[in-house]
Image (cartoon, rainbow, N blue to C red; front, side, top):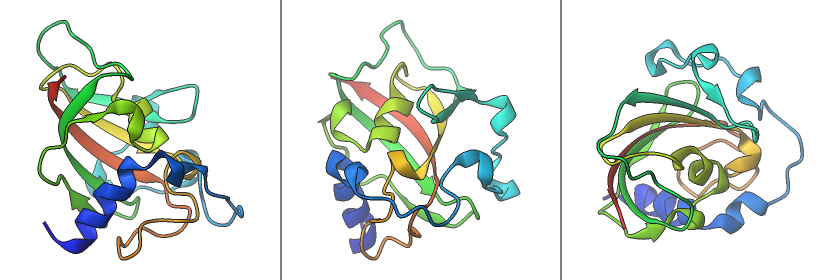
Length: 154
């Protein structure tokens, strides 16, 4: 795992990153962003959560157990910014409570089943706002696009 990916993962775990100030510059809402065609994002085909996070199940998971905020989870993920730039992917598996991830990511994975593949589009205010991880390549106030595969719960 390269240093930028490691920094990104560590920062992703810090809920405090989502509490940083926002000076209002740049498109911060998914509805104001043009997504690269390669990402396959069509907000009209996604479910918008009350918070403004968009989710879409790409492949159904197995079983009846659904991920909740207090669960520990292991997942593979890939992260892009809306212009299609790939930012990074999963580090070695971590066993972290869902509630310790950035807010938009945590909200986006709730309800997943093992093996499920989900796209999650996160507005800046529920991601890194004006403080993306140093060296990550994520622009200030960027909307984030994740593809997540849930490997295990607990």
